[in-house]
Image (cartoon, rainbow, N blue to C red; front, side, top):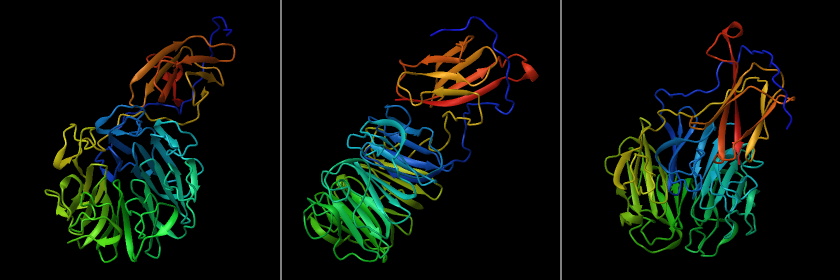
Length: 474
């Protein structure tokens, strides 16, 4: 590459670009929404960012690393989030603009971005707009559009995409013959849709009767769940069971019952819905691996099945004033009226978020949740500096569309604000381009801070120009 000799680089300032990197603390922040993944947990904070904690072997925390965390970390660069959901080592977020973003494990295409490559940063799901609800389960994902249509992607071995085939898809495909849908949910290898008329439809794996249609035959297209009407909410467990909440506040269940997850006082499987014992006044339901849970209108939480060895609901002690619940594969979450999040169950991977890896059979508080982030924000005002290619493999070019103040200082930070590269550029080539080699850095999102001039000295009118740009290494 030819370079110019030491010619002076002329002066240029844009007064309105003042700073580029902010470290912010969300005052009085609190969790607004909670969700459970297989061995990780998710929450939406008051400022509409997402935080995650727990296992991260496939990047399911979405913070640009593959390191597990037993305290909440912030999902990289996503804002305006209104819903989150966790699958088996992958996660999804719905933004207020109706787009869906995903990260984590992608072996079966469950990220929906047209690839089968894992990602530890959010990637936009292909061709999905106007979405109002999302579900992540096992190795598949589901979305509900504003028009009442349902879309699915990922693993389809047992027909869980519901499109009449058994072929996996790494882009969304429409679930067959479903209209007028108000709610979607899923279990280990099966999904549900609740219609506006209060009926429930199910598809996918059915070895244990989890579709609730009186058979044990899997279906790659939606089938009606037997004898269920007036349903207001649905939930699916990872160990092949299903739940429904009726408009009379009673709960019904069907499918596998080895661990008592049907909650009817027995351990007998059922391929049609049976009533859960002793539960009335229920306003919300959730299901994990082999556990089921319910939130009552008095703010108490009840649980049955799984490691609790209970085939009827029992009260979760020391919880009160609860407003929402969620479940992972072997851990549970509850949010109270003060928006404090409580967790209990398995914690070997940090999924309780209390700073330890010790399991707990009583609720413990998730710490540092939504109290602040130290992520880098990109300032998007007009700038004479561009980076390309973006995304890139091993490095990128810095290009200036006009002359800039010399010297040019370059600082590159990861999503947590840690500086990973610095350089002072005193010479460009004849096209005002400079190549930055990042081949030794891990894949992920980085922020490039470019400062023209010396901010510690009095340049023209005492100003130096700074800009920031986001670069993705993949």
